[in-house]
Image 1 (tube, rainbow, N blue to C red):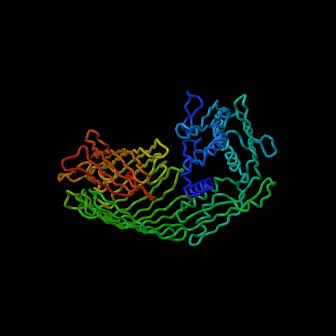
Image 2: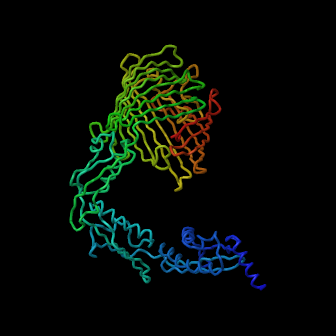
Image 3: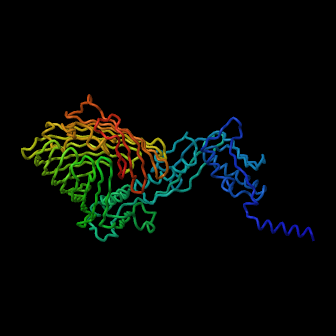
Length: 605
């Protein structure tokens, strides 16, 4: 009776205790069977990820028997890991010891790493297949026999067939043979191409306010053209670039009903779109110790005339509270964009603006009208040419009288952009070129030409982009007139946010008798910063900037190069980084401030 009572109490206590209290805690160790060999971290982690011993470690084991059973069951899992890395002769031992607590020891002997041997490509009938070659698969004899490479090669063959018009191509059974004597892996790929597919009628759905011609004029293939995935993906990207669609789907229809025994079939193409909201509002703010507070409000209609034409109205107010400004800046601007003007991918840009600005160097009131054509020359290069008519009233800071200018400018730009992101690039480079002849239509000044080149380079040494090195440099030159004949607003200035941080806006360069900025005809700027992510949302950015402005048409480097340095903080959001920079001038003049602080959206460059 007493014995039965003890057993009953024991059972009740066991049921009452939580599972964790009954679990057997243990650790997992991974190493080589040979004392002189150290496993790579990559293989060690793959083994830990594959075994149940590691996956269930935090839960513990109900008993030592269960722990030993897990160890036995994990042996083939570790062998699979070794084979996936080409070690087909590898040996695995898993033991459980108590020293002083239970330890599951996984030990492996890698052996030789096998290589790829013969690669055979066959058709559905098992005969040699010349529509796919070894170069298409990007795998070759002699390379390590990694499972991921063998598997990844197969869809490359399908992609090659699809690019040749075989839209229904698929893979047959893949056969892998291991030869332990030669220590090689032979691979046999089999492909079933199906019929050649040609493009048929185009159907369009999902349009509400956008005219069908807007979509159809970007269809650059004809009925009967051979299918190519690049054609459909290119059309999808081209339609997305219009900015009026939330989503774009371009696909072949009726593929399930196709008779695969035919040599050629014609398949319709379906374009399905979802339109975005036509009207949007937005805005932004900026704040710095030298330029004060600024704000911008923007209204845009993405489809004002029904064919993806865009109309934007922008109102700006700036330099509110700026210490050296002669007044507040404000302006109103209208911008109109007409895509596919005269030809596909060519955009007509029209604009009109009324501007009042009053930095330390000058005061300006102007009405401007612009017209330009913009088009891509390649995937990475865009070109723009245009004309700008401006009626300006400009007064230098040291001149009590203002001058009225009527100028006609012909700005021409070329932009090469190979960066990976617009607001926060981590890799690549970009170059901007400007050549702008300016004609003065009245007697207020001379005619001249403005040239400028800016370059940016970004490099991240680590895949996680925890640190990005960013560099920039720019040169500018004005030729054809002396400084006094060029309106103050068209001269070069340096200093401030986006230029030489640490110095006030326009504070780098020539000065007049009152020590106010007077601008120059040549400019050199450079900067380097390291963008370090401390967390996923917070970053710090140490930076150094330098710049010089001279009155000559080409930079006179015998004059002092102004240098500023500082530290910035970034808060990363879904729409770009929020930026705060503190800059200090390293070779300041007596009238330069000890530091400058800047707040804005986006990186400095």
